[in-house]
Length: 552
Picture 1 (tube, rainbow, N blue to C red):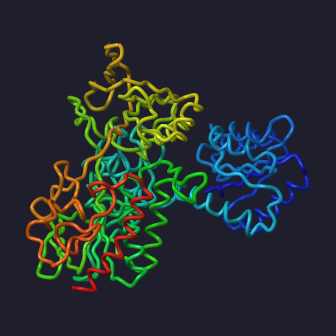
Picture 2: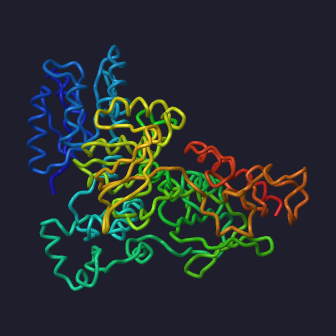
């Protein structure tokens, strides 16, 4: 397997040698460091690397160079290595150009000259960028292999499951011609049914469900103990924040997540307005770091579906889908929300076969040189459009309203406007889909003109708002008509406590109608639907848990 490359580019020989020296001193164990004295020379080097299949992890370029400046050069490298991290080395006087480059040329970060000492001004930035690149890098390796059709809903479900749980895997399309495809297609398991999953030990599974695959890939499905101080349901930003703060403050904490840590935020290709990350951070990366942090404090994480919540005297009990149960002193509900289904005849049958809810993290590379349609006008849709624009020939954003300004952050609107292969169609809704085994076309209605147009389409990604999946709480907790969990002041009607409330005090700020059970993040009525607010609620809830436990 070829060693990933770090490429540095500068027309000043002295600066070029200094950058190369510092890169080798830090990264030579894991990366091959190459240099080039100009943009054209670097492009020639990158072309050769691309032909040989050598991965490029980082491209660091000076800005002021003859023939081709750094911004133009880095922008030109996008088609060759779209996943490589790009850093612009610049003088203080050029910082405005550097900031514009972050929005226009795919630049991930800029660094000021001089960068001495590198331990303070160079390595921390590059360490973060390389860690993010490594988290999405899929080298050839002896690990999990998935053989199937791109248009198979089950294959898509398995790939999303593995990707979101950060389980490295190799995707093998049945239409491909690699030796692995030929080898696996001839096995009895493949003939029994696709998709086929081959595990590192040689075990093969025919068309497994994610639940059947869970324990095979090292995920835990059963709690190690019967009783905990704190039970958390949901592993999105709010749940992970609660887990980190709870465990760090000495609470024996169990987090139960149905699918994969990160929630909807974990599906975001880039969160650019989260405090502390000036060039943004992917939802997957944020979730991975949060999980690592939680485990470091001793949080136990299991992959299971919670089917019921009940009280057993002073204790709170979670019933799980496998028939087991787990008890604790207190519970935090952080189950988030699910994507709202698009009500179009025949669309459900094509889900996973060209129709996808959410960002479709595993589909971006598959959409190379295609036209991708995205339904929605909020930040999640805008972030997905920017991500797909790196691979697709064209991205069409279908927006029901007459403007993006009402639902999308201004920074995303500006980025979309500056991306030439993104086209925004306002007043547009998908009203029909066509295709038998996979999506082949969509009907788009324009409310302004009254016309409906049929367009060829292979990929449709839907971001049209979300609903809470709280049906399992019916009869246990009070919810509003949309299913959001009521908490704190929302439970007080006419100054009276909720029916059946057993304590001689009002419900706490995030406390639900069952004492000792708290709701945080998107599942709570009245919450602000932002990653930062979910993290804030999750961390604040721990103080209320402590108050509750002090009087149990």
